[in-house]
Image 1 (cartoon, rainbow, N blue to C red):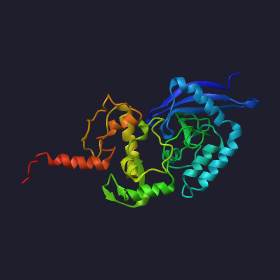
Image 2 (cartoon, rainbow, N blue to C red):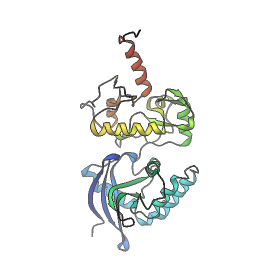
Image 3 (spheres, one colour):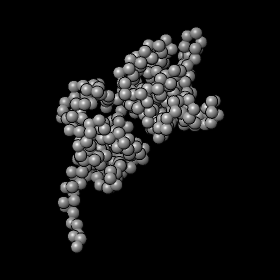
Length: 305
């Protein structure tokens, strides 16, 4: 008897995620039905069609029920070190009670902004799958539902993450300068933002560790943004990735390299794709602002009298 039964392959367009629904068969006739991301930017997962079977074999071993107790213990230790996560932690703990589908309308802790809680859980490196039109037996409606997959944080592969100490170092080195607002602001309100958006990364883009990163690489690779602007940039970059229409910052359609359309000669993913981001205001807001100022000096403007 096969240990893995593959079901439907699904796309979550808004999040640029792709899943395969599976049924895992374990000892004692235990069946575990779940949904495994095949494309999941938060963990750098990008599985080609010919690599699905090998990937599912790895996932099968990692999420087996005999590992669940230890996995939950490790996650408790992780959340115990995050005393400020008083709103997000209950969402995670509910999802971790049973690795099954949870309706966001009636099964998760009441909160007007559940999407932000889920995003924060993903930012911690956890793997979740989403169904946007699934029937809920509890409320009888078709709702968005989520399932937590008990993979290691960061997935079997992973995007770059940083410790609180490294985050403080990045913010200090960049002088608490909000790139969007063009001013120094409270360090508590700023997040290190990868200039090169993660949605265009592939498995080879991520560095194994950021702990030894040099000051020069921090300045080259990061800018500081508020959480609001960080989310705005994510949406802009996601739209660019999906449509090929490059983003506009401050409503000013100026590109110091290229134009409003992604250069088709440049790969859409991987480190080589970063060349296609250069010139876009969102990629490096400070550089874009400087280039715009230089450009304006060359433009003859009428004098208003």
